Each structure stands twice: as C-alpha cells, then as structure tokens.
Amino acid sequence: MTSEEFEITMKRLRPVLIAEANRYLSDADEAEDIVQEAMIRLWQMYAQLHNPVNGLARILVRNLCLDFIRCRKPREDIESLSIIRSSESSERMDHERIERMMTIVESLPDVPQTILRLRHMEGMEIKDIARFMQMEEAAVRKALSRARQTIKDKLTCNKK
Figure 1 (tube, one colour):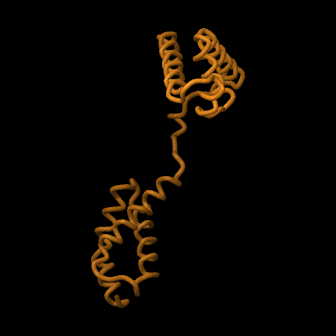
Figure 2: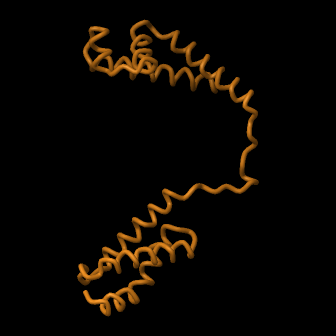
Figure 3: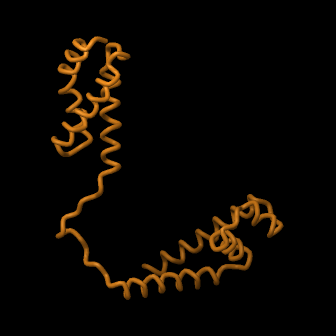
C-alpha cells in the first residue's frame, strides 16, 4: 500500500473507527485519542498493509479500547463513597468473622476438618493430602467439597 492509498483509506475509515471506539468508551475525546493511536500504529506499518484494512483497523481500535479500560482506574464521586469505618471496628469485625468460621470448622467431623485444615491452612496439594490421609484423591476432593459446602451453609444460615 502506498502512502496516498493509506491516506485515502484512513480518511474513509476514520468515522467507522471512531464509532467503534465510542461503543467501548463513554468519552468522545478518549475515543478520538484511541483512533489516533490506532492510525499511528497502522501508519508505522503501511508498507506491509494490503486492502482491505478495515478488519485490522477495527480489531486494533477494539484492543486499544480494552487496554485503556483495563488500565483506567475507577472513579467515584465523593457523594457516592460510603462512610469509612474506623480501623478498630473493622479489625473487631474481622476477628468475629474468623472466630465464627473457626467454630464452624471445629464442628466438622474429624476427616473433613483435617482435610480442610491441611488444604487451606497448611497449603498442601490434594495428592499430598491423599497420601497423608491414605485416601484416594477423588475422595479427598469430595470430602473437601462437602466440608466447604457445610461451612457455606452454616455461614448463610447464621446471617439470616
């Protein structure tokens, strides 16, 4: 593709690319910036391009928009921010949650309790737990799943 062909193609394609960027971004200025960045990247490789470049340009704009969205930090208005709890009350609530969780874990039968502790507190792999407990890996997975479900059920019952 020659530079003249590139210019003609980009003039024709620019509104389409801006519309594509606007679908992802809420700000028209940001969309313009993204399209400009895409055109710069396409210009850097115009000698290797062949018509039609519509698909490549649209994919490039889409990927740049997604990168921009991922990197953008979420913004919140001051009015929408919730009241920040004091660190003391937050620590107390965390401590209460941990105590409630440990009470539930301690109420489990011995085997599921041991498997749960080995997996989540000691960080052991399933195959190592199976070897240690002299069980099949599938049985360990099943017991772990049931223990987790029991804990979840008891926690949700206590909340209601």
